[in-house]
Length: 180
Length: 240
Image (tube, rainbow over all chains, first blue to last red; front, side, top):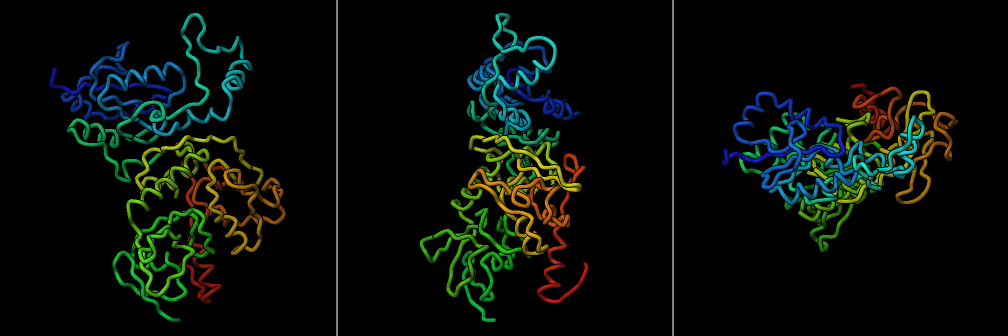
């Protein structure tokens, strides 16, 4: 088991579509399971991002303080961090809320509806503060590779992941990096 | 017409004296990125993507689309410096407004999106501005979305030079510039707009689109410009 690559995937401010596309790897998931061990992922029940990760695929933009903390942990504990999908790479749809102030945003979303608007960091500690501005991942931590796409196609993900499994660089050719 | 001889990427080539560097370079089959240029419209040298180095003049940078060929000129179309500048231009365009490809009518057909990938832009090094810009859907057939506009001014030029209506102009300066209809009226109430749709067809991004198009549905056709210009300038009226 120890010679397997320790792979992690994480989900920040995104829709989880990149993870859905990851599951679309279909039979390549079997190839992946032979070469890598999934040590952290929203599709596995693991609470704490572990030490000694070889490759971390990070979906989503950095939108709240929990995302900042997890990103920093990912960076400190992973050899290679990959911005996985357009939200991580560009901010994408998540970044569109930057045109509003956080208070205006929460008021618009919650005050128009029933109940009080959560401001974040309530005593129960469940809801994290929103950052004043959503950021792409590489503006919060150093990122080693980029896999754009909304979501990146399964083929594009496999091209990137299989390259990493072989110890090669993530493809940067034209067809591998189109946004959207 | 007289012929001049110049050097492009260490190869001697000849060109017509009235040609621009861009025309001479593309005649050689060399790929040179452009966004504001469009065959059939006047050139404005706005996007700066077609910058080339004049190797006989301290590698000075000149925009190929608005520089005429000259006898004895020597230019280079590719270098690390040029690649770096071209990527910077694309990244600045992407960071300046809300180019969210995933939810754009032009996703998959956009010149900015394609050029970014072509030039190897897989992330943007600059802070995203995310400006709060409006859309104008007042026209009965078309929609204008300032969020996607790169201020290439193709719409302004095609409306003035080809359609002859001059509906479009530019308001404001620098990053605050906006393309406006009829001295900043809602497009739908513009009296100069003939509704011909030429501006929509030449727009390289999703800034101008057909009303009712949803994500990735908008495809644009530029062929009409060639037919019109051939007719006007060469008296060749051929629909191909």
